[in-house]
Image (tube, rainbow, N blue to C red; front, side, top):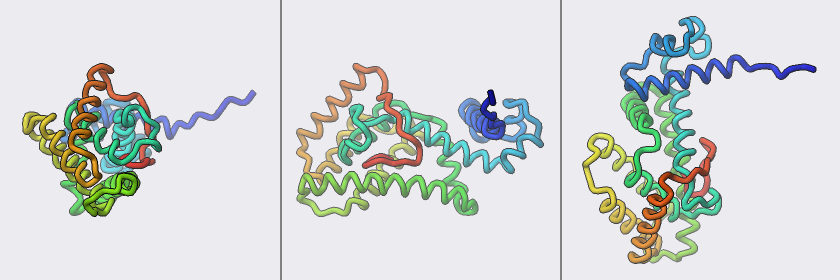
Length: 240
């Protein structure tokens, strides 16, 4: 009987990615080096550069891996299947995850800001961020477009423009919290953001606050985010 062939290359690449992600989490991205990865994996420099030509290539692979894990840990609104949750449900879910719960992957912010600081002369870093943000906006805009049509929103707004504003809120608030965990009161800012965004979707203020309160109680009672998993780089309706 023939045994299945072991893909050594994939295994070794996974070991390098895991080692690099671990170093970033434990020591910070400023201490990520080929020497540290060699110590972590037990590989020689020649082996390491065979699987990844440069440290920047490893960073790109780690970036993709962290995005995948964020998708997995964020879950879905109220445990719904991805393709059944609407844009407004996703807005509430993501805002609550960002503002009320601890970061899904704390080290991702460090890597994200590192990429942002390098996009002036690293086209590969810029493209990776542009692709991530673009997929996020397109998926969110699709879900919001359906909500805007169904709810017959009174205030005309382009779905993509609204998705861009939601993305800006999440990105800006995330950056503020990364710099200062006590920069704002989470529930207060959450209520304010949803109140503003709900206006464009025709959601009554009372209904917005009620849904947020219910979501908060559900999170406390469960003790953890939804366990639903979403494959990376496959955005669903309203899902980044």
